[in-house]
Image (tube, rainbow, N blue to C red; front, side, top):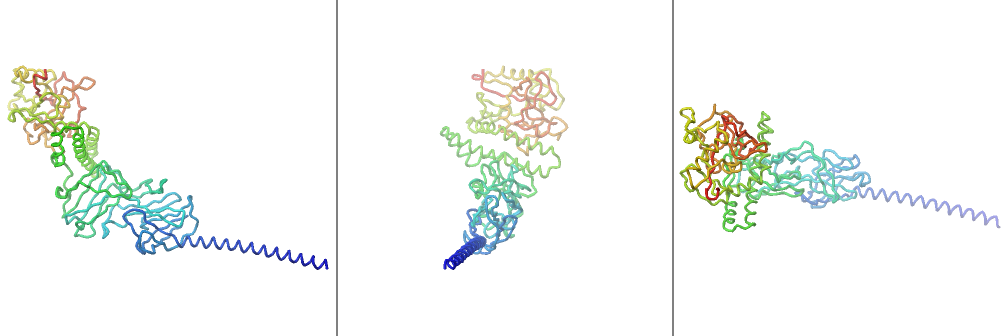
Length: 555
């Protein structure tokens, strides 16, 4: 009996052991099946959510590229709205070291690795019925879960024209910064996509109307760009009826997911011209209505706040002029046949940027100077902005005839009475000024300082007509180019002959201004103050101009 029970007990133990083993195996199989079902479930139920950007809602069937661990598939949105389930499956486990990437539009993807994506932002875009180019509104996502949060890579510029017939826009960063290209994307600590590196960069984007009739008046259109600092300026070239108008804006920045607007673009002020016409300033820009109103406000109530408001508006207009110069520099870099032209324009831009505050202060002083010309018919022009008491500056350089009236033994060629006197030393020029002072109890006469000369001349217009660059074979009468006037209304500031100033360099040499008939155009610029001569020597291309101040205060 004991033997039977023992045998039964062994059978029972064996049965229980086998049952337990089988149960364990079944549990393992179930666990594996559950993991596979969960993996399969994750693969089949990926969700795409749009967080920002112009493409604010999915449409059913939108193709979305998914990239993971070397796999690339095109999934489709299954429903319309800001969130959609995606079709398609992609194998693997999504981790921080090996995430799942999403790209929309699908064909904008170039490459990817475990840390970043590379996508393209097109340099040529067309505004469709939504007001933007679908291929330009690139959105990307990075996830370790089954939810893809799509965020745009781009920002840009929003435009809305009321006029008809606009068929194209050209947008340029005048500083040459990238607006489009092949872009490496990484994610910051907040999970936002950021530009890591740029290849095949373009600083110009062309935005075309969808058809020959042009953009629809009153409709919003969006040019998509990379995030870009356009504080230094951007150019919009607006094409209409075979002509083009150029608009410049400054002091703005294009952030990701933000579309800035050119708030001060006034369509009625756009000047359309032949597209092949050179990009130059034809004359000094006159005061606009805003600057005029702020000037009047300051004149009536000279508070610091009113001064700051006026200076800020003047700075805005000044920076737009600089932006225009930069655009010309970029154009020369693309098209100039010689490097000299590029170097000349680069020098102009550099000088304008470097001396911005000085120039603005000079312009401010000119604007607020309340004086009227005491005698509009005489040879003296109000030197607005000068710190000297009631300063005036000569209408033209001193001529041979005028100098001969002082120096009786002075000889010059017949027929050149009205030519500028040259070969005069600093001492001789000063003696002439003293002679004028001795004859006038009310005034003191002297050479201008470098700053006073600049105040009288003002900024040299780009299209100025003058005797420089050997357009003539030598000196010309001071009124030969009288159509070209300085800020004070005087003539012959640029070209013909250099002019002495009383300002010196550390080495004691005297600064000369304005260039001469044999000078390069760039050397004639008013702000160029690094050309000097020895004051004890006379030069065949250096003359002088005189400043007059009130005697009571000056003495």
